[in-house]
Image (cartoon, rainbow over all chains, first blue to last red; front, side):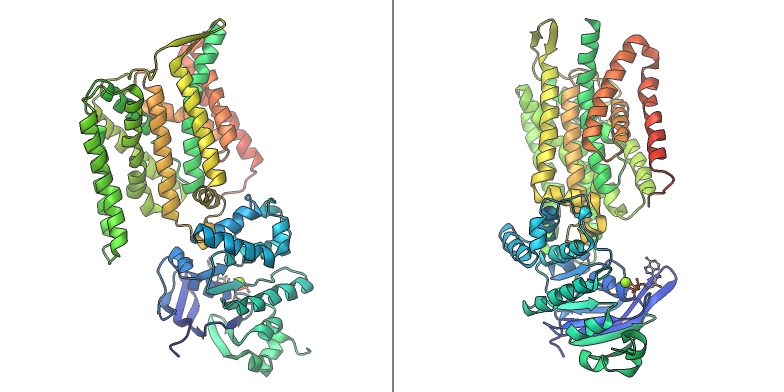
Length: 237
Length: 341
Ligand SMILES: Nc1ncnc2c1ncn2[C@@H]1O[C@H](COP(=O)(O)OP(=O)(O)OP(=O)(O)O)[C@@H](O)[C@H]1O
Ligand SMILES: [Mg+2]
């Protein structure tokens, strides 16, 4: 069990007086895709934000066998990278500059190399290098958010609803890209509304309800779990 | 004839206000600090240059060493829960060794009869690190504070810097020697070499800033921070890094403005405030966001000031600061009633 890439235990997060995460524990192995599913307001985004360090939390976060660095920047340098729910792109800067900044902590040659990989993976971004990020379509924006994240050469990608607001076909494209990324050795913690699709590409799944883990286990088992099927997967498949 | 003279005067002052305005826009967009004391850098710069001209050791170097030492204490305090050797050594080098070296250089060079360009460069070297120390002392601890709290901090820094200016420079006004004292006549127009220096330096700084923001990764990181603070943190841009860079740049720009204005105006320890406010008028017209509008507005402020001091000299300041009112009305109408965070 020491080989876990990420190990959370007893994570509590409060906004002011209201506690929204009541002791979440979760672990993931290197090279795996773990998905966190749950209803709106369950605390999924809060969990990812806590792992990245943009909201304060109590409890322990062990990353790669050591306590995770304290600052957000330290966590980025250590190989964590979050694609947040709102993407937080640099709207008035070009696609190219957004991509470039994704590699802020990497040296020039690493940046050049990764940039080519990213443009190869997302040819659409390469075509629109000079366009301002704020003028991209929704799908292009998701690609840019993913591309910018990849520029930091992450070992653990935290994806908050990468398919949010996309047409069903593009959802499948994006999830395909996610499962391809795993083949390059990146581990992925995926928050998804689209539970069925997420469980299909994931190795492990966690169901979060009201700030607590309700169910967890191998994705293949969860996708046939009767309780889960009823409320999150829809009874008909 | 009078009109051309006034225009020239206005453009010359306007160029200085443009530098101030640009520094203010830079600081506000990157750090959300409304930096009232920007004018103090100008006064410090002008007074330092004037003292060097007189063959004296400028008191600014003691001030620099004090600022550095206080910044070091702040660093020590934040390192109290343990740190690594690199962070400690970097802090030691930046906060103690650097001002020490500048102190030594100044003591050695001040009595020599240096060429005026060398004195100007030495002045800029003395003032520039102050930006980093002031950020460390006053603003870094407030990184997550609201614009209002940061503004209150600015008032405090302004009062402190002005008070220190009085202690270190005294109440007497000083005027530096011009960087070059020839005059050229272009047709019927007499242009002083000093004005040409001012135009040249202003244009060089604007071009330099443009290249910095467009071409370098650090410059882009500053823009990114201005556009989306959280986004910038998520790609690993430290708030402290952009903050210290912005303040160092602002101090350098302030020092250059001081070196340029020192020879054309007598500067007192408290002159900086009024000059800074004029840069402010320009920055506000630029919405504290637009560099080009700020630069153009600054020239406008210089012109309005030159003409009003000729035609209605006792109302000069009122007219200049009155320029803000229509702009504020227009800004508040065009933004509707949305509160900004
Ligand atoms: N900044 C905040 N201040 C106060 N409460 C917050 C804040 N952010 C989130 N919350 C609350 O915390 C709870 C969990 O929110 P969170 O965004 O983590 O949910 P989620 O599972 O990601 O939901 P969704 O599926 O809708 O994205 C919600 O009740 C929300 O209202
Ligand atoms: Mg969410």
